[in-house]
Amino acid sequence: MRQVMVTGVGNGIGAAIARKCVAQGTTVIGCDIDGEAMGRLKREFPEGMFFSEVVDVADLSALRRFFAHCTERFDSIDGLVNNAGLYHGKSVYQYTDDEIEYIIAVNLTSLIHLSKDFATHVRDAGRRAAIVNVTSVAGEVGSSDALYGSTKAAVIGLTKSNAWNFAPEVRVNAVSPALIRETAIYHRIPKYRLEEYQRQETLKDPILPDGVADVVMFLLSDASKHLTGKVVPVDNGAYPR
Image (cartoon, rainbow, N blue to C red; front, side, top):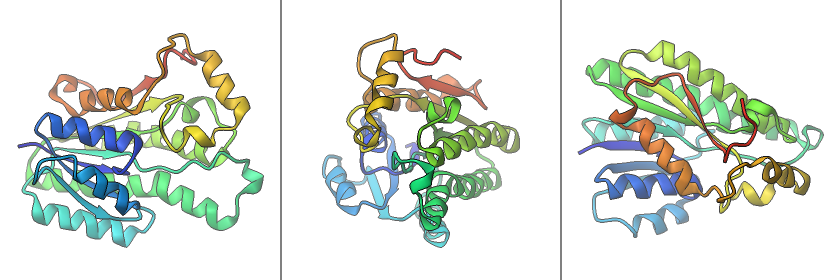
């Protein structure tokens, strides 16, 4: 049975990924700061298909404890989805120093450490696996929230660099969504940016977390075995690049 680790699993894209994994018979090992959301999600699944732990990924010691618990409990982990992220939708002028450090820790530093620990574990076990990072179109074209835009741009760089670092044992790819409905982020986007995203879309079916999860599942699967270091847009054709 396949096993996949997902950060930020409680809501939105993370929860959609968990549902698709379980539907395919894959065990989900998740973490999130929102324990209540993970509890609700767990009740949807058959016994033994979803394991979760409350973790603030900005806390490196807590993140490493979580990973140690996972490797102790599961004999193999086939995939890692770095999905946890924060968006406040405000100008850089409005950020405090503490907020800046926290955003960087959640959106970037946690990915660096967890990816390295995961790839080391896979390599030492003599196995093959896949990492999927969730970035954003904001990392490619910029954002009115400079902290979000810059950290998501860094995730793109990390994806491409780690594809070199972790080969051939671990493939590393990213999804780059644009305007996703039914997420916490959607309701924080300033109105003028929301309208601009909508104007740029050439396909008009709204992007939902399920649509992003479909691409993540492809990148985790053997169907993408020849892909690494790629950034796959999920954006309704917005911002051609």
